[in-house]
Amino acid sequence: MADYISGIKTIRATQAQVYNKLSDLSGMATIGEALKHHPEASKIAIEGIDADNCAFIIPGAGRLQLRIVEREPNKTIKLEAVEAPIALTMWIQLVAADTYDTRLRLTLRTELNFIMKKMIGGKLQEGVEKLADMMAMIPY
Image (cartoon, rainbow, N blue to C red; front, side, top):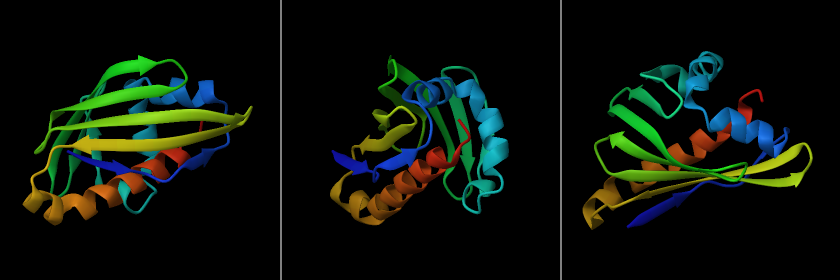
């Protein structure tokens, strides 16, 4: 089992605003439009969206479909991969530092053998960090 954890990101919005935006994946359509201007995110296509599911087409990696499997209002959103080359679970954790100061951290957990961990572990850590950065840039 391997965990990949992002740094803590600061979002200038209330904890409820951030939670409400991230806990409903149907909003990914508008988020996807905003992220098209980000050099890394502009290559990723978003499809198959509803409140609990969202699929990403990632060049060179294929299709990744995530489903929300657990919500703890204003605190945690747990997602699992439905379609992915490897099994993974991701948590979005939110903490209010102040009224308009929410801290976000992502944790990605996956089971990788030693060889796979050496091959793609760095890319997974980099991906978690970039995803957290993109979540911090979304207008809330």
